[in-house]
Amino acid sequence: MLVGAAGAVTLGVSIGVGANAKSTADDLRTSCAPACSSSQVSSVNTQLVVSDVLTGTGIALVGVAAILFFTRHPGHASRASPVRVTAAPGGLSLTY
Image (cartoon, rainbow, N blue to C red; front, side, top):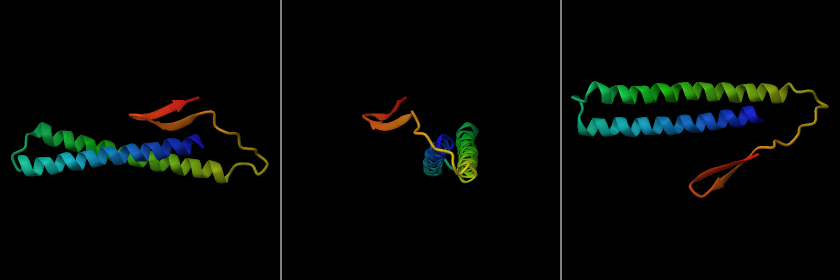
């Protein structure tokens, strides 16, 4: 269960990083293209690579969670996770 949650969170972060990279790239296209500095372009490229790596990691984690779920022993009783993530003002709250 935790592996699947970690995969979902990783995919969410990947989407956020990718959206930020796209926004930054769009800003550069309208403000300085084709004469943008190499550091500006490098920053966007780094964000895109990080997003791609996080996407792959998230997919792998969700895949591992699915394998663990479908290959568990039939008599194995699942126990509730002691960790809770809830929405809180200004972000998320983690209790355990």
